[in-house]
Length: 226
Image (cartoon, rainbow, N blue to C red; front, side, top):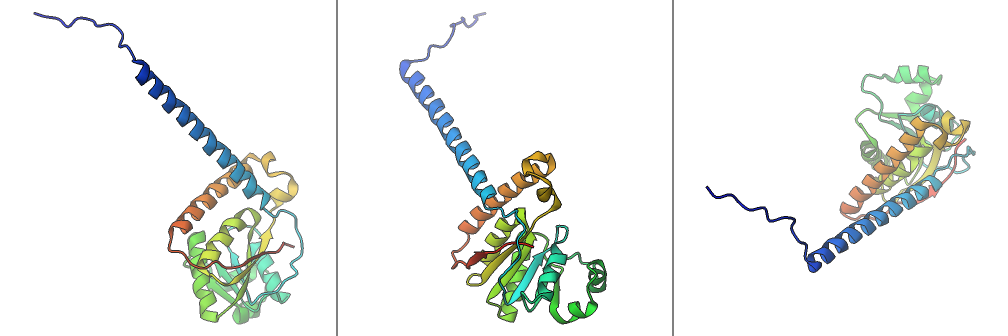
C-alpha cells in the first residue's frame, strides 16, 4: 500500500508573496480611511447638534412635533399658543391614545386641540413621521413648518422631512433633554450609545434617500429651542 510522501512546507513564490503583501496593505489602508471617515462624520454630526436652549424667534404656517421624547408635545403646544404656527400636527401618537388624554397629560384646554391640533396615529418611525407630515402639509397647502423633536434626533428628522416635503421651509426647534442640560453627552454611557446609534441611523437614512429618485430639496432654516 503506497503512502503519500510529506512534501514539507509549501513555498510561496516571490510574486505571490508580493500580491499577498499588497492586498494586506490595501485592505489595511482602506479600513483606516473608512475609520477616519466615520470619525470625521461623527464629529461633524455632533457639531450640528444644537444643545443650547434658546427662544424661537421665527414663525411658520404650521408646526409638527414627533412623539417619543419628554416635553416635545408640551413645547410644541406652547409654540402654537404663542402664535409660531397656525396649526399643529402631533405625529406618531399611539393608536389607543385619545385626544382628551393628550389634553389632560399636557394640561392644555381641549378647545385648543379641537380647533388647531391634528393627530397622526399611523407613523411608526421617523420615515413614517415624515411621510404623514408630507401628506398633511400638502393637504393644507403649508409652505413653512416649525419642526419640534429632540436635539439629537433633529438632523435625521430634517433630512427625512426635506425629502418628504421639498420646497417647504423647515425651521428647527430642538428640544434639549435634561441629560444634555446636566453635562456633556459622553459622561453618560446610556446617552452616548443613543447618540452613536442615532448617527448610524442618520447615515442609513442619508444613503437610502440618496438612492431614491431625486427630488428638489426643501429649505432648512436652523432655529433654536426654548
